[in-house]
Image (cartoon, rainbow, N blue to C red; front, side, top):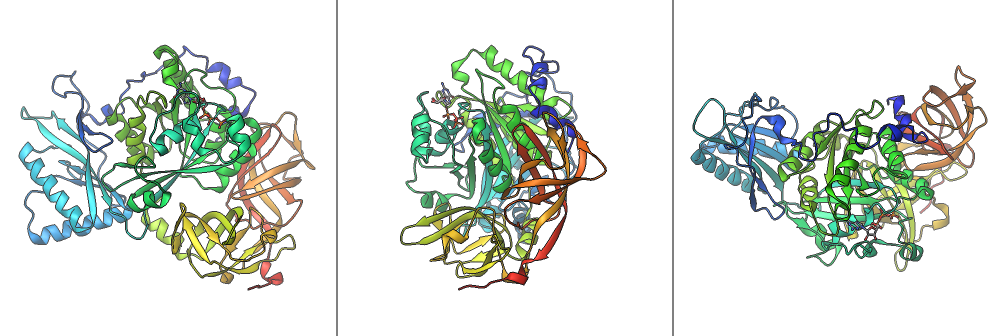
Length: 611
Ligand SMILES: Nc1nc2c(ncn2[C@@H]2O[C@H](COP(=O)(O)OP(=O)(O)OP(=O)(O)O)[C@@H](O)[C@H]2O)c(=O)[nH]1
């Protein structure tokens, strides 16, 4: 982690240098992401799968970039095919097997580039060959139980007078047994930036009235409805079916119905914007293992309040970020552009080192999703309104295509490990009993499985049985690594549980610790950071006050400095893993790092099995 990220947490110094109007190098909202490919967009898929005409390629200004893509990678979910015209039965079988493998690599999604050689050269096909190739591709998809959506068709103007086409096609598996692709997006942004409203509009399918109608569906507590602020973490779901169409509450009545027809599910973790809920925001980011973070910035206020801090937190935790500039209906274009420039300047500064990419067309949205997944430094920026609906479709195109960052092999490896479930929420449900919510970090968890939960204050792990499992409010028999769920534990005594515990398979013989060391960078501190200082430490779902017992080789630490620090938990032992990311804070003091060692003992010594 670049210690210069600490500038984001300072008292606004970088904000001053980000004064609007200094947009050197700014391409403007029209700066097209797609142009880097040296090809002219022709048609792009819209939200309902129908094609929309893109810019006319032949009449626009000449494009001098060489027509190629990076060479095809052996691994991953992207396949290049020059043409697929009338394959023999033998070749067809081979093509179908290959598609199955690419789908596995993308956890149910693959992208086919037709008319492209393996070395990335955009050769292009005649209209007739393209038609035949897409027909074969559709047959291949049918054979492996998938659907196809044409993301874009383009013309290449290279070395020939006859126009030739290339097509980019999304292949998505039709879900079976609720095993849809599930991506988690943490929603960040200052208070009143429009986070809950945007989620309301995306997940309920109805525009806002500018006075908070859309967000009403999302609130959990009475005081939130009264003040209009999000204080608890809430989850909202947006599905896409195998044809790439939105599945949300506008057509479905229940989450169960959404899960049934979705091939891909985006779970938004709505985190609070107000500074006083920062604890919850950090917990949401560290504990719920989001795949991506969406930072919402209001166009009329620009970078204000907690925006910079939220940006810094997501970067410190290495969560890839995309940005939504909301409320564009409220201000003139110039103000929107000023906010975009302000963001671009912050993103480009040395502590961030990001490459902003303004998304102005559906074509840009496709490119942004692909490049974002390939390079963590790319930061797509959307400008939209939840009231007029302007450019909302671009965000949906992006979310539909956004691929998972881990491939099926990494997923498979995690599933081979012993079961470890992080307890993030605890509830008592009438007629069901004690229920815990959280994420399965590794392994597989089945209904009826026996696990141990802990550590208790005394450092013990207690036996229990998983009575039933729900994902997105609908029943599910098997939970796989990386999935979030709620588990019913029958009459297990709720008072023995706390957030931050883990439920693991008994064979794991889990270790616990009071004392651990971490290599840290101090992001911001008003005075100096030294021995005896107490901070709240966040590691995954663990959140507890710890005392700084020692700074190796240093007396004190200043903002931006690094050190190995020994911490001691003050209340109870915790289950930690060496290498885990760590974040700590106390008032304005903030730091990040990773656990380097722990004085661990096996909890097995005090293992008390119940049930
Ligand atoms: N005109 C206009 N108003 C909007 C838009 N998006 C949100 N609003 C309004 O802005 C106000 C604040 O929106 P919220 O969604 O509650 O903001 P938030 O970021 O979730 O706030 P916290 O939950 O407190 O962090 C509400 O009155 C919305 O109706 C938009 O695109 N255009």
